[in-house]
Length: 91
Image 1: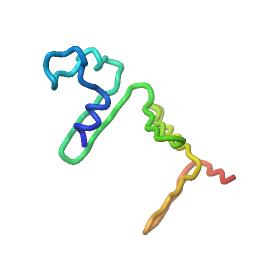
Image 2: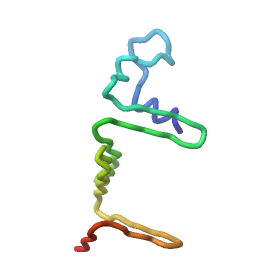
Image 3: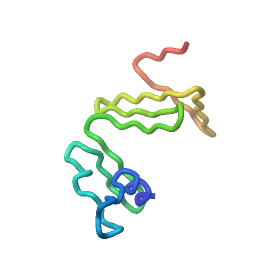
Image 4: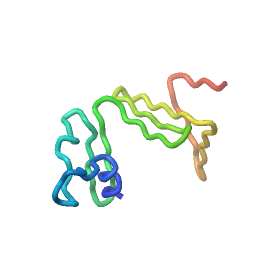
């Protein structure tokens, strides 16, 4: 899976002589970082990170804030589904 994400983040340079060569300038110091491992894929950003598909998105902020947006959001658990916070607002 890490390979797929890396190809999306750092596509092959169209002008390169080698098919597998990645454009080093695409990996700027402030840009996204990809840390593949055998059991985990870590995608990090210093500012914010958004995963978007159609009308749905998940945005992560460095402050710890997480924003879920979508027409329909489902939270489903076989066991305990716990909501914990300083204050919880419903509707």
